[in-house]
Length: 158
Image 1 (tube, helix red, strand yellow):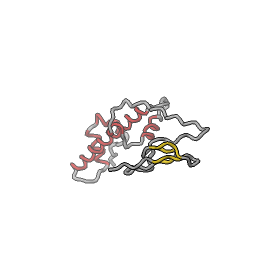
Image 2 (tube, rainbow, N blue to C red):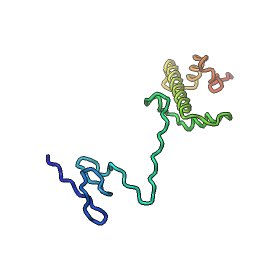
Image 3 (cartoon, rainbow, N blue to C red):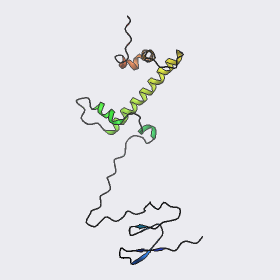
């Protein structure tokens, strides 16, 4: 297969300049390469005269958390978790990693509590999850779920 001949770039005045290989910038024009997206530029255009180039952002410090989708992604909004953590008067700042860990722990707790409550409803041969399923789950695991006593109280008998 024969390679196409290199094209010459032109200056603003229309004069020909040195040859430019295909796929490289020629002034403000991009010479197309067959099979590549013509809108993709390999090099950034030069900064306008009189303007300084914006420095690249500083790299963020790497997280101390292990990499992986399951460890770093949470369904609970991090901003909401941070806001709740800051409700304590003595808490002024919260590290992003602490917010992520609390959000992940909350998510894992809710997942386990929901699964256990669902299992309770299935043992009662129901497909619908009811308050009594949540209550029974709390009562079955009283040592771990004692903090839910005021949130899921036993109903008062009339």
